[in-house]
Image (cartoon, rainbow, N blue to C red):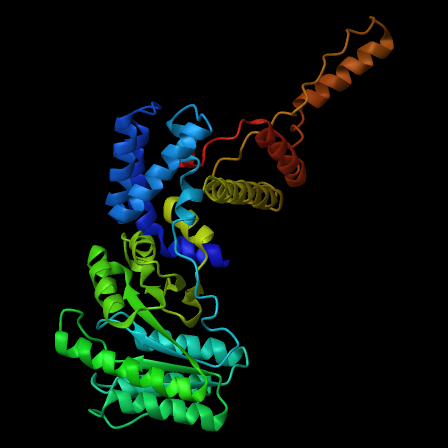
Amino acid sequence: MSVFSKISGGLAKSRNKFKESMWALIGRGPDLDDEFWDELEETLVLSDVGGAAAMDIVENLRSKAMRQNLPDAYAVLDLLSEEMQGTFAEGADELFGPEPQVVLFVGINGTGKTTTVGKIAKAASDAERRVILGSADTFRAAAIEQLEEWARRADVPIVTRERGSDPASVCYETIDEAEAKGADLALIDTAGRLHTSDDLMRELVKVASVTRKRADAAGMKVFTVLVIDATTGQNGMQQAREFDRALDLDALIVTKLDGTAKGGIALAISHELGLPIVKIGVGESIDDLREFDPEDFVRALIGDFEEDEAAEDGAAAAEEREALTSAADEADAAASAAPGEAPAPAVAPPVPRPLASPVPAVAPEAPAATAESAADTAAVEEADTAEPAKMSWAEFVEYDDARRAAEPKKHFWEKW
């Protein structure tokens, strides 16, 4: 399965929700009046894109519509995907790059931080990076054991201390070990904590401060990454604000996009806080933590005409092949039946009628009434009673491609 197909499948719930909202907008008509722009902004907000991002997207589209003299609302909507892609914050190109660095993973409980750390460690180890893990989640039961299992799978060293230990000391020792072993990537898992708890947030600030000071001494750059659960929707925005205020975040990782209809929240947080998204989680397996690509994400979030059309064409072609195969099997069974015996009944889909030739045949002129023409007429009558020739699969594909190429191109949303 391709990377886009996996992301598209993971965002199916979010895409269906977006389409429902957009259908109401499309149904109002093509006029580019104030009501259209207000409803477009409202539609984006209802799709969890966020108020700030929705306002900027609509204002930019409105400006383009005036500059380019766009004729109607449909022309504006054709630019929606490109505009949404440009709304994501850029940066963090150095994150997970080749230079020595420490990545501190933070977030509330249950966002999948430990699993995310383990998946990144496995991918980095497979890419021949020198990785070390630090289990600074000394509070949650089995958190240390869970990360130890990931370290075993990735075949990388891990620094742990007994449960209840000071998490800042684990970060310090992890960087010590990274220096000693020549590791160029230290991944540190921290305990989940509610952003509304002042005491826990102050403890996390201390952890980040100790990590930065020790990493500076080791010549390693520190990145603080927020792992956020997409299913939390707009509540995730408040989480991100509080963590960013306390820690000055560098990037986001958005998980559980496959189980939510609120995938637009990724765009909302990235845009409002200016935080780039580096990875997204669209499933449970180790391969389901994907590199973030704005184009693929937006195509998967709002739908894509070309992808939808290709999928429908593939399904139709598969049905055609199945029908032809069933018909051929039934004919073989009838031919192999013993003389005098009726062939066994079979239930099969109806055999499709042979497609007409794309070039209409020109009726020949009637031949003169001669003995030879009488013989020709008899041959024609005999041919008429025979089974009509069927188009081969290759001929059908060629004919169908030519037919589709002649059709006018539609807007991306017309196949919704």
